Image (cartoon, rainbow, N blue to C red; front, side, top):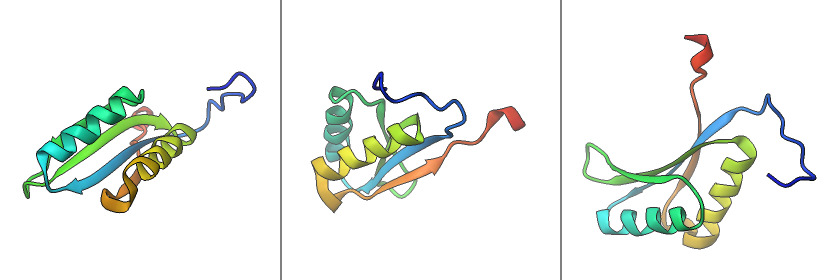
Length: 91
């Protein structure tokens, strides 16, 4: 976070999901690019054979930054979704 932007401790966390992506090679290349860019990215194969890439969890502001990076870098070829992270304190 930038020094001039105060951290909001109540800001929730989100996971960024990219995909589905049909090619495992393409998913690996995208995950590698995101990792080099400083994001925590991991590719996972889904039951239907397609792949998704998971980033985070990040606070909402950082998750939006990650989603914007994906869209600017890879266009609409790989759909991006922001998913809430379950609050483990309520379990």
